[in-house]
Image 1 (cartoon, one colour):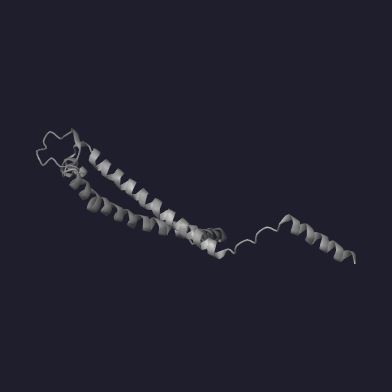
Image 2 (cartoon, rainbow, N blue to C red):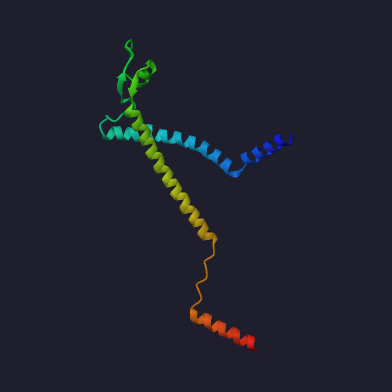
Length: 152
């Protein structure tokens, strides 16, 4: 029975350790942040790219059909073809995910950069300025004065 209690205590200590809780919070925030980046790509970036290139950059439905079921005669969309069991080389989907990754990496880079700047500013405010080093001649005179005091 004591082994079980020891194991439970050890697990509890592990689970409530700060780094584990921080990791859990990071994963949850990361999942929500991923949705924001998806929306950024789908709702903001891709419409602008489509406008700039004349509407030809809708990557979501760009694919090459490698094999299609012989009985399929439905719409030629990515979702319909994959649901029917076709083998589809979905380069447009990959390109969209790549754009998501690049935007996510760019946003995270700037977030980390801003956090580091804020952290450095906070540390600079907390630490008092170090006194300037004592010049060598003043240090020598101080040492001579102390020796003279001790000899009296």
